[in-house]
Amino acid sequence: MQVWQLLLLFFCAFLGGMSIFLFKGGNHSKHLKLILSFSGAYLFAITVLHLIPDAYHGNDNMVGVFILGGFLFQIILEQFSDGVEHGHIHQHGHNHSVFPVAVLLSLCLHAFLEGMPLAQGYQVQLVIGIALHHIPAAFALASVMLVNRVSKNNMIFFLFLFAAMAPAGYFFSDAISHGVVGNLQSYFNRIMGVVIGIFLHISTTILFESTEDHSFNLKKLLVVLAGISIPLTLFLLEL
Image (tube, rainbow, N blue to C red):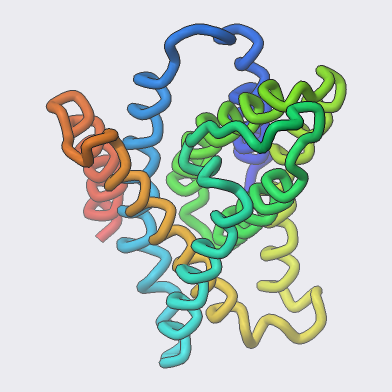
C-alpha cells in the first residue's frame, strides 16, 4: 500500500472532523447525505464484487458464519455509537460537559476493522470508499464533541485518534496476512468475514437511511448509481 493512500485515508477523516469549525451552525446535512449515499453504494459494490469472493477462495464454509457475526457485531457497536458512523448527530444526556467515551471507542474499533481489508489488494478503490465514508462520520463525531463541550485541543486529539484507526487496521491486517502476528494467518478469511459483515450492515443502512422518509430523490439516486457504477466498471475492465 502506497504512502499517499494511507495519507488520504487519514486526512479525509481528520479534515472531515476539523471542518466542523468551518460549517458550524450551517446547513450541511444535504451535502453529508450525498457523500454518505455515494460512499454507501461504493462500499456495497466493493464488498460484493471483491471482498466476498476473495473471502471464499479458501473454500472455508464457516466464512458465512463470520459474515453474519460481523453484521450482528456492527449492530452491537451502534448501541454505543448511536449511528455516528452513518453521519447521525445526537446529543448525549443532560450534562454536555462530559464526552460519551463509548461513542469514540466504538467508532475507533469500527474504523480499525474497516482498514483491515486494505491489506488484500484493490486498495485504491477500497481506500476511496472508506475515506469518503469517514468524512461524514468524522464530522458527526466532531459535532457530538462540540455539543458536549469538549475542548478544542481534546477534539483535535480525538479526531487524530479516530483518523489513525483505519491505517492501523491496515498494518495489523498486513501483519496477519504475512504471518507476523502469531498464527492468525490461517484464520485471515474468517477475520475478513467479520469485516464483510460490518461493511454490509454499514452500506445497506446508509442506503436505506439516505432520506428521512426512506425514499430517494433523483439527485441521490444518481449519486448511488455513480457509487455502484465506478467499482463495477473497474471490475469489468479487470476481467
